[in-house]
Image: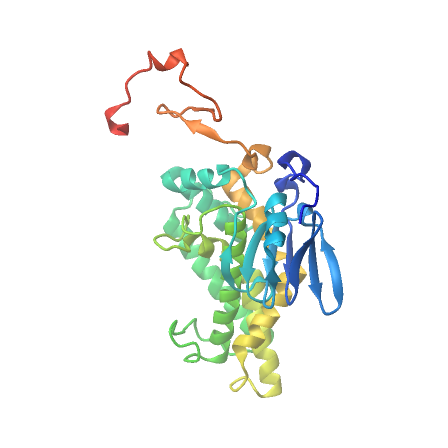
Length: 331
């Protein structure tokens, strides 16, 4: 169907850095009405303000038409397929960033030892408010983090009256663990899914971690670790405590119950938006609000590191005649 409406241009849309917002939809069909995105379920039809969103998280039971995808793509919004309330990551479309600048900054910082440890220290500083981590080695930071996590487990154990020994589980057998370790595994898996969805939505690489390394989800684990103490660990202990009071902790489906509890906590705390803001600050620093991070510009790379404008014919550029030879290491 020809709507008679020309595609939006990036200048007509809200700036991405002004709208890092997430909308979760489930059990509905996404379509297009003119130039608007619609969501239809058994209660009726709503128009989704997709141009004012960064990411649409598509949960269970969602279906979408080709025309719906076209209006989402035109708006610069990203689609991410997830479990309930984003607790699991399955796949994603394009990121909200039309520029690769945020990805390039991530790659630059993770490839340099000084900048990598600086970002890692900042990550740890977020967990130790008021403490100076600027001169600590990675070994010292890991030691402080280990002591902090043990303390959190002990405090939650006392608060919720749940016995705690240590973090012990079999990755290949979820049920081969006590109730609290099963709840923690389920809760952390949900957090990994949400972190993964946000990272890919912003155009960053899930594999380029600063603390974790050597895995295709290293950066996912980096980001998720920032929120375990305030989100997933307390939720897991609370779930087990409530099940113990009912006398069904051993027989209950702890995985499902924990996932629903974590889903609700994510929603209450608007955790997706918080992760997005923190991630931009960690990677971009003072440039986090720079429009260049999201600029829709294609440039050409020069052999001396410079960038030149794309979309231009350089066949009559006299500067190419006297250009120096490319260094051997770049050939």
